[in-house]
Image (cartoon, rainbow, N blue to C red; front, side, top):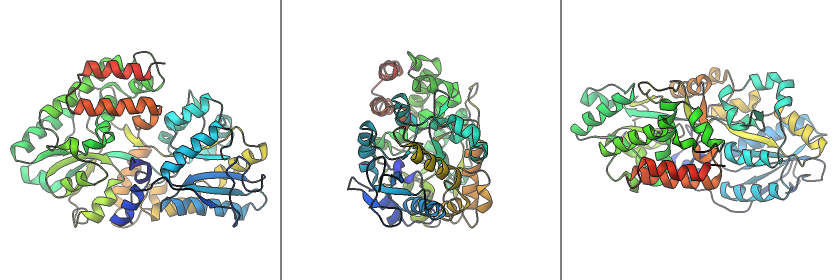
Length: 452
């Protein structure tokens, strides 16, 4: 299972390594049935007694408890319009929600990741268009990071409310290793390539990478394409425009990545290292590598498993370097801009109104925001940084600033694209890093996968 689907919503600053491992290991067992006040939650649109709205979401702490508390607070405040909830482990949820929505038996409130899956729901008229509702409830929209909305938007219309937390991809570096060789963090792609030679010359691998997991490789392409051609290039591929990957900036991106591989930019044997094992993180905090491009969710693991590495201030972090002559805004980032809540178009009018009231009064309320922050996460709410305290404040503030100030916060490609195209993407990326496919072959394959 892709650990981002659980971990990347949780920075895990207060979690032990064992707890993080539990999050990553969630499987496909049966759902936990829980009702609003003790009654079992039904699996159909009507829920429990056919009157209440229903809500399905994921298990796994701390998110599970926070989601439960939000529903419970709403039910206590609205005894006549309650919400029944059903909880699923990650893989079971993906299967169950797809089947239920396709059969017209999904919950009133649909928890999801936005992107390609949401586009499918919208194109099949399975979820409500919330654009006019947000126009009428501007205060709700204005509280949230603007960068969180694109992954909940399809063809200019909002089909999902951004919720929960943010986790951008971060360029991490080991300050001790940089001091050892007398280097500075890279500001440009040219700096990156110069550092490759410098660190290899000192017997230190420049970058750690869990390449066997494939999506870790993808993060490099996401950032590079943005920096070279701007976010519009992938947006065209996401929309299925004909031969969108034939843009010259894509070939430039692919060539630069293969140049980095050929120059020895990554730890030897990177294609056999998995992200699930956290071996890529260990290579950074033990000083075997100088840098690592990875998600914000890895900070908690490095803090818990890396001895005094984080505590003593040896971990550095920054946004991705610029590319000379590139069109992308330096503030742009990629990763997980939020989680997303949609409303089933098959729900009754009463259930839809309950869901909208839930969105307006309960989702990311002050109480919920406080719970996310207490558990080491950055909610997608403006001003949440005022709640940051303790030794992790610098990192949390960095994540908050990166997400809230991003001109564009692009969703990870494998979640933005439909599942079949995403699998082709990941397979081609693995081949690209293994130098077994040329940029031209990569472009041809991806055009076939995304052309409508």
